[in-house]
Length: 132
Image 1 (spheres, rainbow, N blue to C red):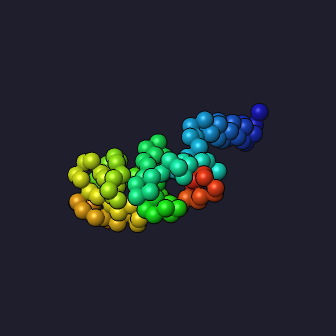
Image 2: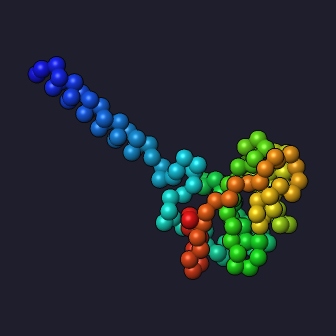
């Protein structure tokens, strides 16, 4: 086999191996941990009015500030990256330093967090909440 042909074969085999390894490592989520489109994140009945639900495995918190109005935010606190732990009394709470975020827009209500929780796109179809 000539040097050029051997390099071509080795390069092709290496590329195929890399593609297979990357596919095997894929989790079906994007770099932020969010679920791929088409995935049902929650049902509308799972999200209380005036409260919310944390989807730790998806890196999301979904809230329902008013009946029929659903919002989603990153569950990663903007202060030091801790995961928020609860949703109560109209706020999303980070346990690390007690930052509180408004359930309607993710804005900082109190605490050391320097910025709001980033919004995440969702869509509500019937009773299913999915990534937007």
